[in-house]
Image 1 (cartoon, rainbow, N blue to C red):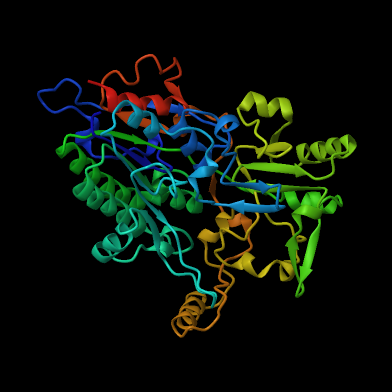
Image 2: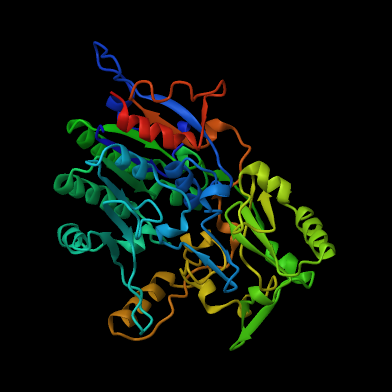
Length: 472
């Protein structure tokens, strides 16, 4: 097997490519195989992190690998759960399992690709905060081998969790991940390294797509990527640069759960004057995930199902609603998927909000915090500080003081204004040129895979990785 690195620059599209010239263009005089070849990646539905990564690493669609989104409804215990981390949830062999079977000396390092915990990878590093009983959230990581956790954070400093996600996101998290990859490579020299760089994704969700809106952030991620490419090419590794999806401009949040509640289909539980979604007691509710929403039915009456389908399909901003046949056609026919799957129009996205419009005082206390595990849906508004808060930074400082003093506190600085979000992803059907992209210099690995549209199937990324490892 040939040493290979796959660098996932989330949100990268062909029109944003501003990467090191030495990677994209041949030297003078030209050397055979020195110029990168590009292919657009035909998206999988939903085009969201966990589903896309699982497709790339297994060569299967969600129907087979089971990752139907970044989260879903766990029917057995009637709970919505997002951002789970156990690799046991992925119901298909990974590309490294096949590579290891062919070459017992093969090793793999996973740097922050999802479902990294308890996998068959030799080395893994993934975010894993500590949650003491006093309510604090402390930055930390989970690693395999376990000792890598301390050695990395001793050398590089504590993983900057609050720069990785939330209103304080910045380049430091992606830089830390890149530096961790270099440290792992120096110590372990894995055959295959997977690296996840998320910075650009969050910038574009906050500000909207287009290089002009994120010029400084592009320069920052370019610098990180240039260092990685320079290192891996210097040690003779083959480099693949890819992304999971492109970001599309949005201006229409779709409050799908509010519509289901108004129709008497969604139930809530009142706790200390605040409303919590009661998924198990609801006839129907939606799990919102960017531009896709899984709609689950607890009432199996066909008349209720048709009522729900018609209601959701009629919502402004909904492009289509997949029934059983539609899910089969999209490769999303899995027991974890919703009974219906709603797909937003290009300029729309789904919120998880279920409390009534204009009644933010009854929203759950975690709604105004960064809490990716308790919210029953993905919430990109977590990327913003509440603009209506006077002295928002001062409130953050006071909450951090409470944290240092060991006091219980609520970091309630996140707005409830979905209109702030300017970029989203998850739907399919747009121009390939604005979506995910793959670049490689390894000759032959794209042969026979690229269609007349310049695209490869998302499932073929698995083959590209395997053939890059095996190519003579």
